[in-house]
Length: 180
Image (cartoon, rainbow, N blue to C red; front, side):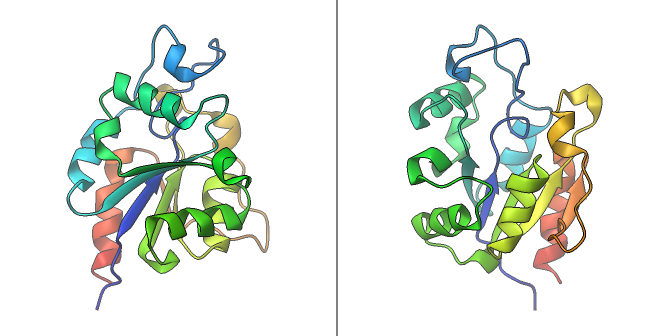
């Protein structure tokens, strides 16, 4: 019998939307914003099968500014909730952030998956909180943040349940986990 996944959570910067290195301030105010390659396609494939949420630090952006940035690339409509670590007063690298976020979402950790490009924030902390974690290590040509995505897990630290180079790989991984 497969495990039931209820919620798939995504990091925002360099997972759903490109962080452009020459831009400063909240992303919603940048002259140009860009979705990561395949983001729309994967969200369209997952919507209706899973509840979708964004779990992010938010950087310099408020929750409304994150939503505005997502709206500019037509991704906001896919997400039930946006949860920013700053609003919870918890660092995203703290497993308590994930526990608090899942409490808001009304979901058990075993029924949630986190997808993101930061090993420390999106994989290690999520795994320590009991979620499955997919490490998104985008190909260099997609504009991902190489610094956040290249370091290997340290000994004794939780490792990702899966590693993907392209968001298009995610539905197949979720299908496999559902059928285990």
